[in-house]
Image 1 (cartoon, rainbow, N blue to C red):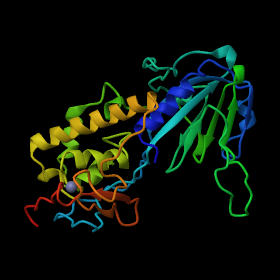
Image 2 (cartoon, rainbow, N blue to C red):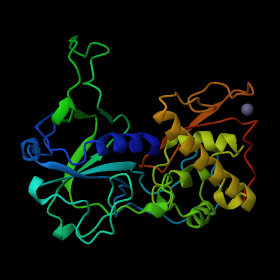
Image 3 (cartoon, protein in one colour):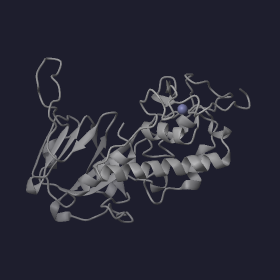
Length: 317
Ligand SMILES: [Zn+2]
């Protein structure tokens, strides 16, 4: 899943076309009528989590789960989505009706969906979705039929000056004006750390708490694994088992890691993983791997070092 820094990078690239009209639209999507976008102006670009309102939230487990044991207190994780708002060139403005204005990077802050005349498209990037702006993707290997066919973007937008935005491997649909909540966005200056610390105290595996997009929007599997390793916390530890200092240290560490990752992306530097998809930790210990998530729900591969990240025995364990 593209994590917060990646989606924020996509967002920044799309924002560069704000105010430009779509010259030509194409793509393999059947969810959106691409011809409707032609001639419309890109007027809004926002990032916001998408968590279905019917996501199940089950009661807390009475005892700490063991590594590898599924844990059921976990709503479905839906990563950050990108929203583009297209309007009539003659009716250009910079915010949704009733909104409180943009946030400095071209993103508005939501508003009255019913009165917003714009055509809004939501992009959900799943595990492998991406946006390209520097040319179309080329085939890196032959497909199942042995053809070297280039990937087909779900949506391809051409703008004046030879600029383009190509969206690959994502789901998209028409939607209403989004209502982003900056207090839960880990990359927003208005991220509410007090609210986040409260969420960290839950009697759920800390590896599950961190992926809960209701509290940590934009936090994905890489950030989860790396921040827990850097703090020496076992992913199956319950949040309620951690000392208050440890919870604060974890929050600071994951925010620093996320902002540093975004800075690296902007400088086109690669991120070095300490534990994620590694066979050994930086100190040379053998790394463990297991799935962590709810039965029947989305479980994510989780890596930890049993030496650097010992499992703290729970009060009932
Ligand atoms: Zn280690």
